[in-house]
Image (cartoon, rainbow, N blue to C red):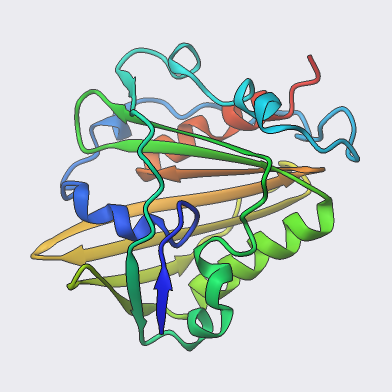
Length: 227
């Protein structure tokens, strides 16, 4: 199946080629933020936020602490990609590359950590609860349906391995989490993705596992802040 890469869940596989192999996560020695006691629900579960409002709720350098540098936003890329060996992704079609997550109200940001290969990115979406839940749930289910598959982009094959993880409980209304390992040209990159829906806000945090774990609660608190 020939598909296009969008800057959403499956789109991360197209960017893994540019990330050096994660031989050692230097951030893993720092303490992980303690879980938040809040439920993660926004002030109004029926309010659909604008993209401008979502932008103000993204993490910034002051939230993350020292050592983080915001990556410049790159123009959207729509490279042709072939997915091999995963019927679930083939059946999902465009939903796996942004069809179900192409909500017009969204905001995104990415950071590098201490000039190393470690990165963390955040995506915020807002929409009605049903479509948000169905969209992200369908994509995560399809991506974890196949423990291994291959993605070919620009003629370069990427061997993918996916593992469904137990999501953090007690945050928001619904949670999803997975671990992706992309291997090509003798190097591998591990990316953790955790998604939380809180009312009409959907948060996705992706990147080095230690950084995702450390900043997830902070990202949810800011995304669902009432003031």
